[in-house]
Image (cartoon, rainbow, N blue to C red):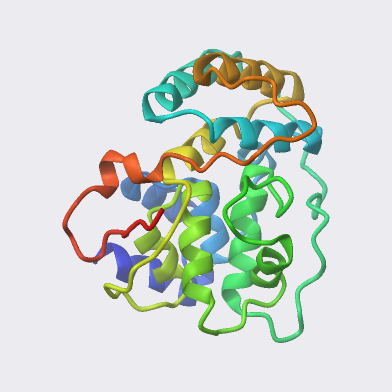
Length: 249
């Protein structure tokens, strides 16, 4: 079965798929087991999600990572993997992200998107700046109505999730087309957030210091302009394939 068809099937019939099969498919697709469980509508075990941690530190971490270029992100990811594994932790609160409840006519994808963020311990205020307002992101998490703004919103969220854009729009029920898109951050940024899933607050602070050391980011005091990211330099996004993104800076 093609990758897109497999993902679509999990969205529509995932509850009929055994959780252990979702874990197997995650390995074959190169995706998080927790993400495949969310897509299929299954509970995610606590050990696959982050420990409870200071969201202010999480916000600083996601922000600082965006100042690293691709070689620096690779070094940061290697550093994160050297940090000792935390002791087994209890489940996070069911909704630790400060997000409002789902709208009565929320789409299936709104639930999925909330789960994907929850798997990373992120909420709309912990995401790095992606040229979207918090209210716009909240709209996706609470209701996610079909409209003309859905495509550009998803194109900006794919990178911080560490997802390929084509996978995200398939799960969202959008068609694959050559429509151009704009984004600040590629999936390599999101892969750092994925690597950091098991980190404690103290370990995140160590990773923040390492990110600053690698990027050479100076202390900007109270005024801290957002990084524009390095998506335009991503080696995976320089193909002439029309389904790959187009950047307008």
